[in-house]
Image (cartoon, rainbow, N blue to C red; front, side, top):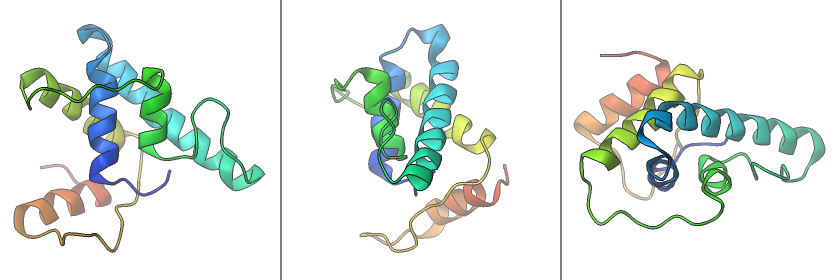
Amino acid sequence: MRPVHLTDLDLAARAVLAQPAGAQPDAAARLVAGARLADRFRKRLGRRHPVWGDGTVAAAAMALAGGKLAPPQRCDTAYRRALQSVLTALSESGPFDFPQQTLYPIRGTARKVCNGLYSGETS
């Protein structure tokens, strides 16, 4: 799977939020599996996967949502649950990359969380 950026997480949470509440964890797992599949497809054949896109979580989110992702009005409990489902699916699916260079450096607690997710640690 391609490196996971904050925009990927936001789009994935929106796509999962659009699913029925009981199906959100499965939708998040399907989205992450689709991103991994698409990245392998891209590496082997040199083109985008016809359904899941280019191997980014954002492309898989757009595929899951049918290309229509409305921004949430606010970061409410439902959005946070959807984001949690995405993060759980990512951590359970195996290692993935965070970009080495980011526009804004990650500091403090955020760095610990990101490094823990990257190494597979849980707290």
